[in-house]
Image (cartoon, rainbow, N blue to C red; front, side, top):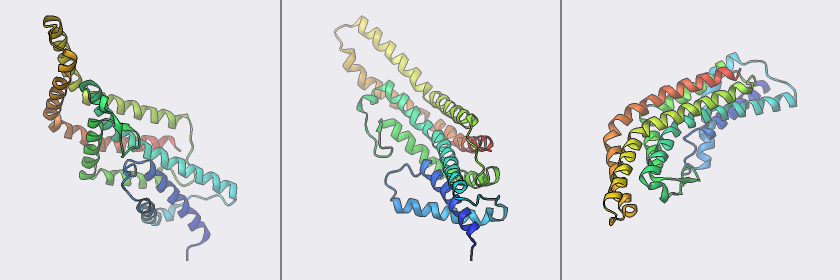
Length: 255
């Protein structure tokens, strides 16, 4: 029979696992039943706990100390899950940049996956990145990194300082930069299309460039995206390394 200390430690592991999965990209899909989400968090905690049970740090014995440890574990799990979500949202941000230029941003509707407004290509590229992430076993890297967090950040020892906020800001800036780099070829083509339409409007005023430009920009934008799709796989493959690196950097500032 497990003693009270092991039960308390397991509950802290469960809190970190649940917070990590809630803030992660997989639980953001609204079609997953809540009971399945809770069950998977429990299974993850049950798998990880026997591995770390032999090296547990001293846990607080009073109620206030245990409450602070629970808050600490929840915060650590949320930050780690948020770091993974930021990396995968690179595809969503790149899609928004492209949609804004080719005109799809005007058809922004409610995105059932995120619960907010989303554009067509942002949803498409995000789902493509998520499927690719699962195909190349990115979820294994994510879960392995989470399991390793108990060695770098033992239970109840997470410290939230300005370093954690700065690290998250750096992760976001890196994600924003990469999203801009992914969409840059299409944005450059769209600038040339706008210049061509501008010259056409000056030389032939009879043509309604405002109405004619919409289908032209959509066609050219989608055609350029189709040419770039083979190269997009290389970029998506690099997301796996980014997830592993960002998780390690964030864990270093939490101790």
